[in-house]
Length: 219
Image 1: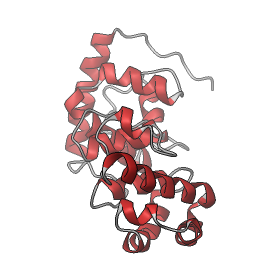
Image 2: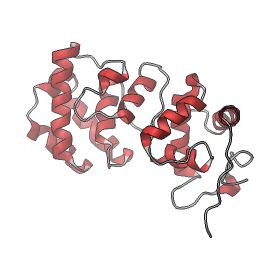
Image 3: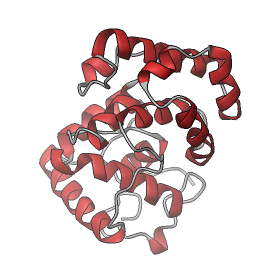
């Protein structure tokens, strides 16, 4: 069956629907928790870099030993790339990622006194760090408005009729205009939880979805 066209909504309509979606998600998923384990900004930065083309579950198996061996930016900066590779080789693309982690450590030490910066502009200067990682750090660590456009978020925003694009930057920019800024970061976490449990890539389980009343795909 061909996918039907979504109804064109005004920005104000989308904002009202998004506000309601936020409220529904807050009831369904009271705890908006990042699925990557971390205890500080550096650990979240590193874990998110490792998560590229790798499951969060796999990253969580790797990072305890990695962070024990390299607990600081200085430790990553002074590490042999081969030693980092050995600890992250099950994550996929481990050689490229190992170089990134070493480079991140060096740049943090040289330019930021070993601390993770708190702005999108500065985070994007770090090796291998893209907007998804930068948004996650800004939102989770520094409490700033953030829109993390992972695959679940993009899929759900399209299905709900907020956007009609799979381009991460276009989706991010559009959703920044739609979501309440103070709620956007937690909303992203909740879409991941909902995308894994209910609105999966293989099949949208509309019969058990808390967004039935407002989802464009459903109505």
